Length: 320
Ligand code: PEP
Ligand code: MG
Image (cartoon, protein in one colour):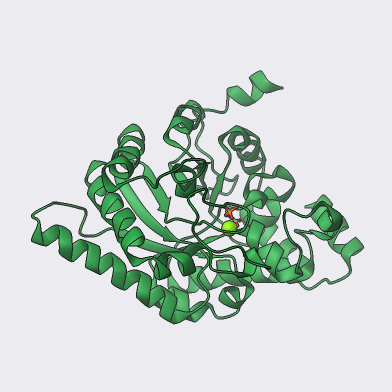
């Protein structure tokens, strides 16, 4: 079975009816890149940069971050590398202090909220990413956005970093694309805010499920209630994919759902054309895509999205 999958490495991921699907990889550190290249991924759809900041006594400075981002961009040889700005807090804590201890860390000063509260730290990361953008095809991804003013402030910080570099005569990709994670239900219900301001969207199903269903994703006691097929989740994902298509901006899914082959045909039927996942899942997902007809799935999934009985939904997903 593994060797059969291995033969798919060099195949393009396309549906029977000819839709090309981008299969990208999620990474945590530069050392994850060889596994990505080994499966011929179409780039890196999510570089979780917080791992450069965790389990250490000091924060990485601009130079250290620049080297890390540059090495990944270079190694990917012109394929897209989506660098997510620091998504610290909740399940991913800094050992250097950072946000104060909170009663509800998942609802606290994390991700973009923390970065906007620490402008110097944010600027350092943005400068490092911009400098690295000369060495490959880098895009910037902002996590946990909910408000228009957060997106505006993040874009303002990027402009500030660019202005500093220009003043220092340091070159960067002037056309660098900026996207946002859709992982808070409010964002998925007010997509106009995000499609108007950003160049692409990436759906973080891990947090989207956590926040929509009010299930702490790290709490074993409620893990049985963490359900990717809850009709509310399916509708939020579908709405995000449709809003992106309508606004003509790319949408990807980079949460765990993207790498679970049980959901590949469901997501294809919703119109998803870009998936990002752990590199070990790429070939299995590709195998599903190769046997799928996107137009046929779109009709079936359109019907499935009208269901709200869990048993009916599960049965319909199994039959796709
Ligand atoms: C997500 O929330 O789905 C996601 C991809 O980000 P993380 O798992 O790093 O929070
Ligand atoms: Mg997330």
